[in-house]
Amino acid sequence: EEKELATEELGVATAKEQDLVSQLEVKSVRLSDLQQEIDDHKACHQEQVKKMSELVDVATNQRDKTHNELIEASATIEGLSKTNRDAQIELGNLKKEVQKHQTEIDRLEKEERLAKEALEIATAEKQDLASHLEAKSAQLSGP
Image (tube, rainbow, N blue to C red; front, side, top):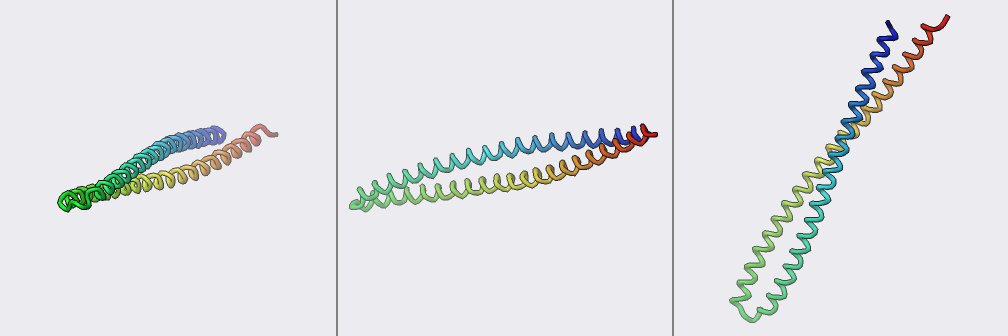
């Protein structure tokens, strides 16, 4: 009867361990997906910064060419100022999004760490139960 109880406890511990391993795998996949999403956002952000930089270079060249014409220069500067503000707003939004994803990654890494700790505890419990079951089995089969 004790052997059956120990076997049952071992089965529960094994199921718990398998559940934790499964949860860890799911969270690892989610973490990987989020990391890929952040990498994609970073690449997009870098491309946008490059395009904005090129736009600023082009606009600066245009402003230099039209410097002697006050009315055209004024209109060009007005357009560049709006583009720059829009770029700053977009850059701010991208930074917020990256920060949000980083926060999610940090949270998932913490959950992963906790899941690993729980897995280690469950594994230790499983080993303890297996040792206990082995000892009981030896006792029952002894003289």
